[in-house]
View (cartoon, helix red, strand yellow):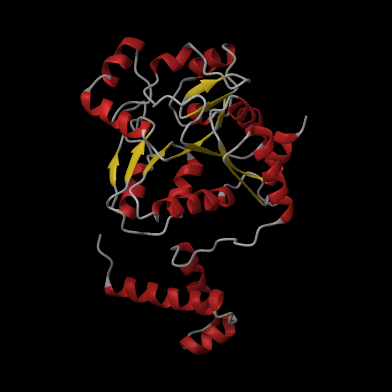
Length: 317
């Protein structure tokens, strides 16, 4: 539905109020006087500015403790890239911090004048990162999915990020029009042999940057919660030693891709082992520590974005 003139006028007022508050440093009382509205209205306009993402923020000043943790992680796991963000004591599982840094990585990559290929996994952190990318016209770039974008019930996956990033950049994009899992290994091989899918995988193989989430494989595993695998399939993968998953590929505690279970029916692009292109995992939280540590040890990723609490847990012996 097209925005009405009233909607646009309201957003204009919200943007003006947001600029006056966050950039110019005026109080809400001062803004109310400037815009000739009540203080309550000024407060609502500032809130609307934030809610509609008319203004965004990035923390540019590095925090020494976070830098030190990032350096230790880079040294221990020979990482090409590592960023550690401050932890949020009030919301220890909040992904806003890592999403902001992952979004900044995407944006800096996409600002290149030289054509680049960005490959995306799925999940909350990756989707949130894409939402933080500022619109920029880059029609010479390519965005490609590493994961099938059709859920078990046949609907499009909510966490399909490729189309969203393409909307923001004007880049040519390549979704993976396949179910996450096929009913058999033979069916998976047949579908992945279709010429259009072969072409998508070929684009993914040339990616300059891969941004992925890292999932745990306990009872709260996102692949199960989001309906991609059943409880029985999850139990089977745990029995086979699954400690985590990356774009659906389950791996054990040493970071080795498991030969069996759902991995034999998975349509996602297999990880490069060891990671060749810059492959950055964005994840945090105590439940994910074993999975992140295993992905690092197995060299499934060569870049990491996490928070300081998770970083300390990964480094703990």
